[in-house]
Length: 226
Image (tube, one colour):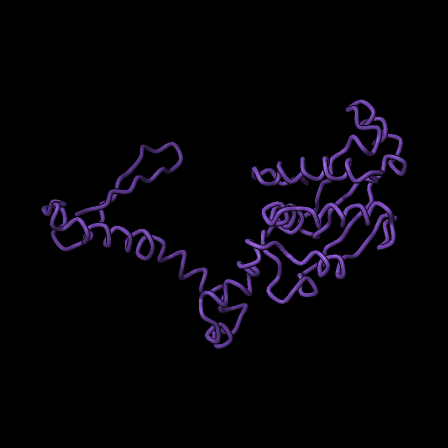
């Protein structure tokens, strides 16, 4: 019962190291009778033994940033929800009214802007899965904060207006060559680190829905527009 691991180092030929899962493992075959033990030993090796050094380094850094006594107040599930958001929300979608209430606007948009109103109507019509994709695109996480969007850190959700009308001459020429001279030809993009959705000035709900869904489909495939 051994595990072999391949090491690659520069131009040197691969080297293999042997780890014995049990004493005398090199001479002990895996059989039908001990296969369950073997599976448990391999799982322990993969989850605990092999990453032990990396886990110790991570724990040391974490405890340097957060008091371990504070971490001890939470169960693993509670800590996960605090860091990564409300897992239950993935099945039902987030509270759109809560997100709209705590959204900031820039670039010329306000809460009263026609395009912003169209955006929120489209978002309210999204499925729970599509709402999760929207959060992934803009925030990098598919779940809302546990205590609501008032606690989204380190930045609030932001709708930023991007328009060819305000683009400089060079940018405008580039957009023209790319066939993106008009706002409705462009897709929404995101600055995930700043929780900012860069939203072109779409004029109709159909335009908004079509372009937003294209952006969400790209984000869902792992390509985060930036």
